[in-house]
Image (tube, rainbow, N blue to C red; front, side):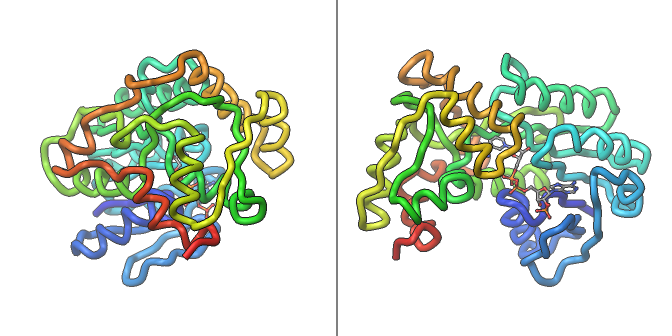
Length: 280
Ligand SMILES: NC(=O)c1ccc[n+]([C@@H]2O[C@H](COP(=O)([O-])OP(=O)(O)OC[C@H]3O[C@@H](n4cnc5c(N)ncnc54)[C@H](OP(=O)(O)O)[C@@H]3O)[C@@H](O)[C@H]2O)c1
């Protein structure tokens, strides 16, 4: 049985739906939000309450592990090892093994704990999710026809979370992926100005990218309820990306190699998500 954590989130919900469709034996770990996938066994967990973890892991041989807060993942790794879980597929972050910024280092610490646990592992390390334009920036796009960031005009790759979910399904259900780490990117590097043009085309109205300095951007995120450490992380990433203008080193082949097709390009993502951003 596969236990899917983060089952109500961006990556986990699409993953869960596909595993259920394929008839896999799966259990969904639910935290606060209700599950929107039918026909699946559920359990309730809270990483902050370690006592909720062992019952969720009963009879589980494979753990799909994800959380928005990296610190949350440590008790789950310990509980999985105790419960005799054989394999962990873990959502980490892009190039976590060499990242000098805090979020990569935190993800790397969890990767190391999983490696030290003796369980088999696969690490999926996505780049910046395209869905951030809906989750983090959606209100501004809907209400102001604009989005704010401090990344300047740097060109970096993004990835559609649906591709991450599909890669995870393959890795969970097909052999040959144990003890491998995959850095996952979309098909091209694009700037936020190019992203604004693609959003404008898809939504049928002009969407602007408004550049902020680091401090203003961090304060804006925090005023919108983003925790200080996460806002600081985004600021860190933006500072790094601004250091060069085009980042071809953010492109990888793993989505193509694993799925046998090209990763989703940004304009396609914009068209698919247009209804959620006030388009048609
Ligand atoms: N966003 C990016 O650009 C990006 C890029 C690279 C890597 N990542 C990594 O991807 C992961 C986030 O994936 P996502 O966007 O799919 O996440 P998400 O949509 O924010 O979903 C987070 C999931 O974790 C659950 N959760 C939160 N707190 C919990 C707790 N205390 N106990 C149990 N479950 C809890 C949530 O359930 P409730 O909603 O019910 O609380 C939800 O199902 C993070 O590890 C992040 O570092 C993100």
